[in-house]
Length: 315
Image (cartoon, rainbow, N blue to C red; front, side):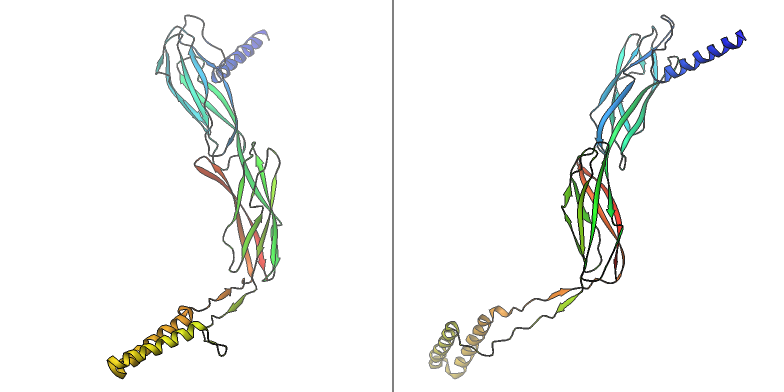
């Protein structure tokens, strides 16, 4: 019985030694027995960081507490973290180097995120590790109701809810994707700012069209009404010009001049020949449509976008 107890205690100490080395705990060889690695700190926590953006760096110091060089094979980041370091391949006894770590939540990440920095070397027990944690700030969209039914010419109303996570508190701009013919959308307000754990809402209105069309009308001169002074002036000038030219160029030249003047008069009188534009509205076709709304927030030189889709039925 006593021998079994000794075996269990020895095994437990061995496991603790391995775990201690894996997490950078101060388990090391006795003085004068070779290289030994110590990390300070062994745990780093990053504050709320917007998805796809990179945090400010945090550092941990690796020290060779032994009396022989520490041969470092690799230093690697696990998870959505990255590291840089100034550690040499062989770290002298009692020497130290610095590992700098940053946190970059990926697109779609939200809430708590975990990771590791693993240092592979010739210290026993090993490898050493730095435990990492962070908060990914993000948001999600929801639409209520999930489906609305209207007739052409009517409007459908939805509530768009923006819910934050991981400490997100930035402004989110809302926009509609493709809509059926004759439909348009509007938000009130067009952007919202959730805070901490508080969601924000906006009212979306999608308007459809029953359809109407008016054909363009050609310009026609007025059928009746007094002649303006401007028109009378042009006629007078045309007549005087014709009389003057008749004496010099004969009847043919006078006629041509009169026609030219009258043509200029006609163009001026009708305002250059313009016509009224058309006013056409297409009826929204009957059918079931999937509508996409996207929320966008700035993220450094880029942006974070999250969508929500719902249904619009037109009878």
